[in-house]
Length: 123
Image (cartoon, rainbow, N blue to C red; front, side, top):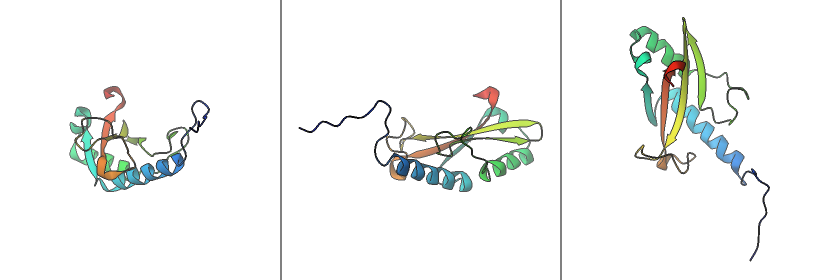
């Protein structure tokens, strides 16, 4: 029997590859809105259609990721400003039926990505 010791909090081998794959899948989904579901909060949905279209375009083209706003490196959260509105967006990873969290967000066959767009006070 071989015993493997890991320090507390150590990441498994290949973790950076998994993070890169999740980031690629999140970016592909966010920039095309294909491969998952896009949801808007009630507040966002109640905005005029031209403002909603501008919000969607800002989310789709968002590239301002930093260590401060993307500590996981997965490109799963962002903030955009439209007129006087500060809008948040978040990508979550669910299982194929959207009942539970995905066991493997790096594997699209078992993961449904859900992009939610909302105001901060709606979180």
